[in-house]
Image (cartoon, rainbow, N blue to C red; front, side, top):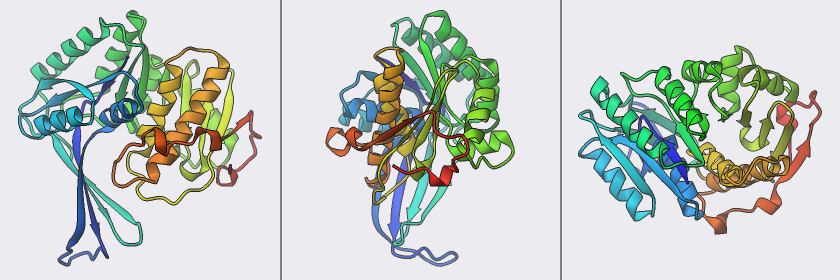
Length: 321
């Protein structure tokens, strides 16, 4: 079983318009509502593809309860702790040209008592000996990166592997602690930590190994695939171009795909299969509307190309399947 933790869950509301006109009245042509937050998206993708998972998150009586119901309808188990503040709504506006505009609420302010309740819930879930615990997404006000570091230490103490997908100073703090077995930044998030553009494979490999010297770093490169960097491995994977509908949540599906295979063991061949699966799941996700997660019929792992030890001088923009 894989446990996902979403400290700052959300309801993703996707609105489509013919043309987005700033300062004018815009009328939508469709509306889509999904339970979200990165950890919840990971759990949704895992469950849709037949993998045992449970989504842990704080929930208020209104929006949080709706997320629980929506997950149950999708066959996803959830485990929640109560909060007084309202779970956020994230708005995505997609116009007729495919341009996406996102407006994300910051989320609630959580209290020390609510943080303690979430920690106790996670301790209970760790006692069930999952294979992985995945902490993903932003943090609500009142919660800082030390919460994720502490969770990693507790997971390690119980022999549970720990994956983190977050960004900015939170990612820097968690990576510096050395507790994650796996992190999954995208290229932009990695560049933010590096403080400069990462233009080549070598640039990505170098900063990944500085960031997490003893773990696995899976870097999403968008249409240019993904790179897996570990102490002993560098592998690139790419998928032939597809027609994109929505890129929202694609990275979460990629992480779910990676973990769905890494759940089986630790041999090098498993890493290759995991990266190929990650790229296949992430690519399938971008062909689907809103934050829809892909199922088995959407995914084509056999179309993914793998390259061991790609040339360090290769520009990221030239990586193609």
